[in-house]
Amino acid sequence: MPMFDDVAEKLATLLDLAQQELEGRISTRIRMWEDGEFEIRVWHGYASPRPEDPVRLRAVLRHHSTDDYVEAAIMKIDDTVGEKKIVHRETIMSS
Image (tube, rainbow, N blue to C red; front, side, top):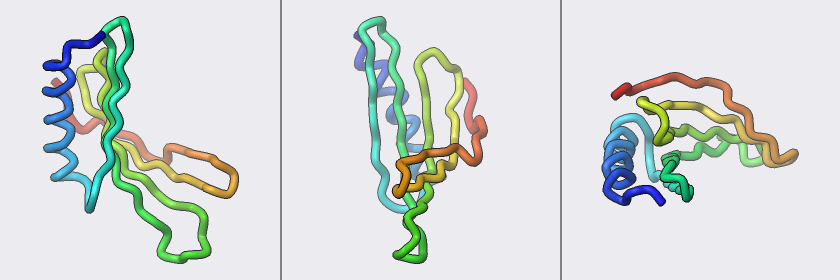
């Protein structure tokens, strides 16, 4: 299992970035594996301005323990077909 101090340090970094880069409330997901790897995602979802539109956007910040960077992405989510598609991705922070 990953060392919690390593996870906590990266989580703090992502939460600081989220305050700068994302608008509104955020959600966080941490995944950890037995081999010591972990992945942290922080995101904010944006509803469509039209209530009848099932497509929404999600701004995501992501770090995986094997990477030396943080990735930012915009996902398009279509709830009618359960499809998630990355429409933009970039590296925003390198170690």
